[in-house]
Length: 417
Ligand SMILES: [Ca+2]
Ligand SMILES: [Zn+2]
Image (cartoon, rainbow, N blue to C red):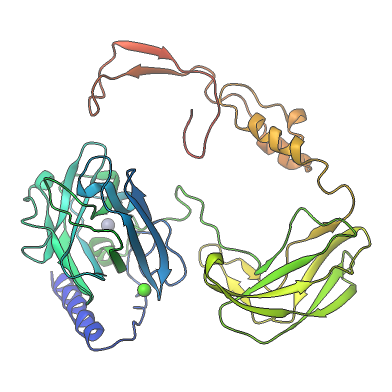
């Protein structure tokens, strides 16, 4: 209990500090903190947080000064309710009896923008923990022994922090923390076109696990999504270049930089060309980075090459795998006449690999050059015999009247179709 009180006080303290300072300092993660979510501060990335819009509602997002920034273009969606525009984190797992500190801060460009939030189950609409604009905190929701929120929270252009302690009375799997803010009809939500929202310092941490030195509730990577960070800041055509074609790579930097030297190395790591990068400034369309052009058109001899920019400090350590990326070095690329020969074959072979109902034969995986990888990709059919029941009502899962043969087809990113 003492720990809980001091945690909340720490939250209030950081709010006071944020209010008196324009600089937003990222709170360092304490060693013992057990975070249930996969991203809190948006300093480098936003996943697994994502936005979700029910057409025709429309929004866009980016990371702005280390905060998740949303611009609303069309405020009203399919249901004419607040949940037509969402910002959310899925796949949470929470344990009965564990105490979770939940906290976030938000602001908007328009005073009075209505924000609702809940930790709940979108499959059945249950709300376990809810943001309450009347009490200006988060409390237990109607489906976990608590009550409905008295009102949406009203955002303003000052950061506001909301927090509470969540203690589920049953184990929860696959639930989500969602924020709703579309223009609604019956349940608040008053968004307008060109409203903007910012979110930062998202927290769900398990105080029970922290006290017990346990990591049961900790988010683990990579759970269900593709977490990708670039391995190189040299952007080029990874397929390759024809010998006589113009060859220009780009190099991305965080700040405006002077021209740098770069070298093109052959397979034996011998220098075959040396040049200077040409700074071209910032590019809004390309993720707000600063860019340099690297012209190496005079490299015409067929072969495999890499580009090394004279910027050896540009090294990144992946915090989840500890792998070190030398981002001043490009991917390997080819100069040659037959570089595009296999693209159609490889593209079509993708569909072979995605089949859901046939055995995959190693010999037919022609798009993978390595024998070892071909063996890994081959497998027996995973869904040769699929059957599905059709339910007449959403939310009724035990109805078994109409049975359909659902075999066949291809896998998409996370399901069958
Ligand atoms: Ca931040
Ligand atoms: Zn826990």
